[in-house]
Each structure stands twice: as structure tokens, then as C-alpha cells.
Image (tube, rainbow, N blue to C red; front, side, top):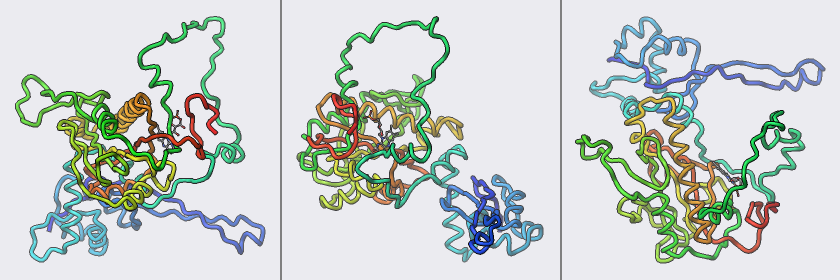
Amino acid sequence: MLLRRCAILYIEPRDDLQLDLRVLFSGTNALDSSVRWVALAPHIGRELDISDDEMLALGKIGAALWVERADCEQRHSKEVIARLLELGLLIANGGEAGEPKQLAATRDRDEALRAQHWHSLAALTHTFTRWEDVCAETGTRFPSFDLLQAEYGPPPPTTLEFDTADDNVVLPAAAEGPLDSALLNRYTCRNFDPEASLPLALAARLLQRTFGAQEQRLMSPTASAPGAMALKKTSPSGGSLHPMEAYVLVQRVDGVKPGLYHYHPVRHVLQPLRMLEAEQAYQLAFDAVANQHWFANAPMLVVMAARVERNFWKYRKHAKSYRALTLDAGHLSQTFYLLAAEAGVSAFITAAINEIKVEQALDLDPLKHAVIAICGCGFAAAEKTMVEFRQGDLTGW
Ligand SMILES: Cc1cc2nc3c(=O)[nH]c(=O)nc-3n(C[C@H](O)[C@H](O)[C@H](O)COP(=O)(O)O)c2cc1C
């Protein structure tokens, strides 16, 4: 059998602090610390404890070339190699009769990761910062500035001041412009009308003008591959690749059944993926936005999930590519907010999401589809119970 290390692996010395109550009562330093090795491999997606010997073996077996298992066992012991294979940190080349299913499964995950061309730190950041069952802080005032201030003192000032008063270039006030109304009315809504539904034409305009493509263009005049197309949208995108897919969770849109849909940016259609009862749709929204009930009842939510291989096709293992994906989501969300404001509805974005719940609902592989954020929109309720910065009411509460 041949072996190699998995494609991406980071090992962290992790401190564990323990409080020894008996020592505490005797009046001496009661904190004890121990350090252990934690292996972080994106194709596995959960932390693994490894021993000193296993850590050393991983530092000697490369991720590119296949080597003989027998040689590795001779150098690092049979037990070490067997455990690293079992954990999925070493990959077997396969092809042997009776190969355990688990070895084939981890090889598949490792190959899926290799095929995407992630920058290793980005793969690590993305896979290990996803949430599954997190419940975001709740309360009548959000965020709780009073609590933060009590704990940490006042926040850093709102901006930088330089000692340049005499030389400052005084600028004219912004002239009025056609975008002003949308820009100045944009705010993050945390009080949606729980009954109101979105007119279909309004939902369709928001989707098309935010996520729809005005046109498809060949990436270069000489591009010969049939898929070598760039998309032109109203927001910018790194490399004009627009890898962000919009998955729409419909709760109350006139004429559209509650459920999960994929928005097709060229055909301008909602492709039904899963029909849901209204309560199921609400529960999914609630779980997805980490129990932020102030967003969960929006009539339409949009999950932004980047198809990473489209971006990484050009920006292979690139240090900036993951940053570009999150910037793409930010641009799209601001466009969505402005269109909502223009149409007289209100919008939100949240990055505090249970990505794993969303991946499960949409059957997305996190190595291939990076769920980045969720935005949504709807009519604002007249009554406010949650803090927000509505135009004309900038106190927030
Ligand atoms: C990337 C990002 C993530 C956000 N996540 C949350 C969130 O989890 N919960 C929330 O209530 N607001 C969230 N917001 C909204 C901000 O709190 C909001 O933009 C800010 O309070 C300023 O208010 P405004 O948008 O009305 O100007 C997020 C905004 C951004 C840009």
C-alpha cells in the first residue's frame, strides 16, 4: 500500500487551563496548564488530538508523493501509521481488495479538497469557523452596548484624528444625486411585519438587479472553451467570475410556494429545490440565522454561497481569493439593500449564521460551496422592539 499526507494540515499546540479547587483553597496558584497537539485538516472538518509521535510522523511524510506504507511503519511504528490512517490524516492510494470503506471515504474528501485549489489558510479558516448549532445573543437591545461598556470600558473612538487642523482641506458638502434617496434610507431592519408578503414583481426586481446577470461575455476574444464565460452584474466581482450563488428561502412571496430555490442569474428563474410548509421554512430560517428571530421572519431570505472552484480556477491557492469571495458577498448585499430601500422595503445581512445547517438543507459540500452570509428583505413593522437605525430615527431605539 502507498501513502501520503492529506493535502492541507495544520497542527496547533493547544493550551488547556484547569482550575484546581483544592489548591485554590490552600491559597496558592490554582491554575494548571497542559499543552496538547490538535490537528486541523479541512477535509475532515473537526479537530483531532494527536500524540507527539503522530505529530512527528506527519512532519516527515509528504503530501505530494506516494511512499510505501512498510517504509513509513519502519520509521514511525505500525501503531502510529495505523492511527494516522484511521484519523484520515494519512491517505492510502487505494486499489487494494478489501480496502476499508473509511480509507476510501477520506481519500475522496482529500481529493475533493485538492480539486478546488483552496489557499491552505483560507480552507482552514472557512471550514473551522462554520457554526452548526449556535444561538446568537438575544435580548431586547441588540447589540448590548451597555454590557460591553461595563465589561471593557468605552469603545475606541469613531475615527482617527490628526493634529492638522490648520492644513485641513475643507470639502464642499455632497451635492444631491439620484442615489441619495436609496443611500440615505438604507438601514438594517430588525422589525419585519410578520404578516406582510412581498409582491412578486418586487422580489423579482431585487433578485434580478442584485444577483441576475445583465449579460454573459467571453472571458477573452480568443476563449475557446464553451464555459469560458464571465458574467456582468450590477456589483463588482473578483475576476468577473461571480462565483456567488443565491439560494432563496421563500416564506411569503406572492405566488411562490414556501421553500428553498436556486436563483438562476441568466435565465432569471427560481429553480425549486425543496418545498416546505410555512413552519418548516420559518424553522430553517431561524436555525440558519442562529436564532436571530428579528431576521427569521423576513418574507424572503437569500443565502450567498460561493462556488469556490469558479474563483479558484483563476486564483489558484491565491492568498487573496477567499477575501475576494467575502468582498463579493458584501457588494451584493449593499446592492440588495439599496434596491430594497428604493422599493420601499427594508433589508438585512448577517454573517452570524449556522452554515452547517444551511449546507445540510441545501446539500452543499463545504469544500466546494462556501456559505458566506444571508441577507433578506421585507416590509418593516410599524412597531419597533429591536434596535435599528431607521431613517428619521437615528437613536436606534
Ligand atoms: C457583514 C455583516 C454582518 C452583520 N451581521 C449582523 C448580525 O449577525 N446581526 C444583526 O443584527 N446585524 C448584523 N449586521 C448589521 C449591522 O449590525 C448593521 O449594519 C449596523 O448596526 C449598522 O446599521 P445600519 O445597517 O442600519 O446602518 C451585519 C452587517 C454586516 C455588514
